[in-house]
Length: 406
Image (cartoon, rainbow, N blue to C red):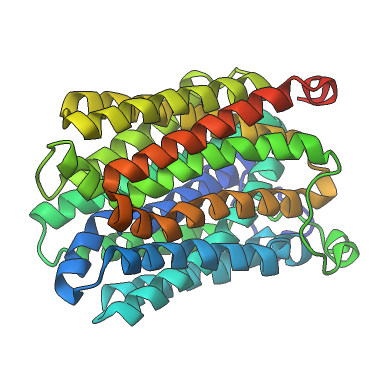
């Protein structure tokens, strides 16, 4: 990464720092690493279920522990980096994620798994909340859309490669419940070294002025609500795949220990790729079209599960992922557009709370649904949910004030 010896006056005593561009890409790497670790457990859950004999409901609890931990950290410490600076917020967050990796790597029962997931959620939430603001600060041209794209794409790419890499390690590497965590620990160590030399973007006087504040939405609440619909459509889809990737693949007649990680990768990769290909689409059209496409994708997924057709299942997964990515890109760009600069971390963290609530909801209810009405029934519920979100987004986008703002 490029170096710069002319940092901000509040950068500290080091003689050189990363340039703004270098710092920007470091933060992208931190988000990628955090999400890689978060979704590495997807292909490991069936192993834990077989080893410790817990139900799908308890699997939902394990998944929800991560989301709820993230929500708590965003509510309690969402504006932390506004108060103490971006760099000082990243350091304990990275160390906390590393500690959670160790707990998970050496877990011997379900309580340790739940503890590790909750810790992982808490500290990943701090990384994500800090990163959203840091990317806006460090984007070399001050381009909010590029910063928003980098944030949402790094989330999608990390989420995609987590289950793919872990699935390959589960299938081919020794110690399948240890190796994925060791890889994440290595990436975290690299990120921590980078943070020590990244430029600080929050001056001391701004930290003092900021004080301790609770999270709140931007002043344009109607626009923020429409932006959050994109996060709901995307994260609800991600949640069901991350939790039940392996059984979904099996019902579509895709068998093999790495297939669960593969189908999750396909959806999450589509989420990231579509944002790169359609990055010039404005926020409101992205939200409206994205929520519609993700609904069409879930219609195909539901049909594929009924007729057990793997080709249709994979194609529909790509369509749902593309729609989810477009909706997420539009929502993230809208929030960055609406947020006041001095309250950027607050607004981004509030938006992330909504995102992780969308993860927690299906995470908590997914296990109960699959036991009560099986996977096909759960997919049907998701189809109806995304259709309602698409309709609400379309109606909201037609309001003149929202159309003029976004």
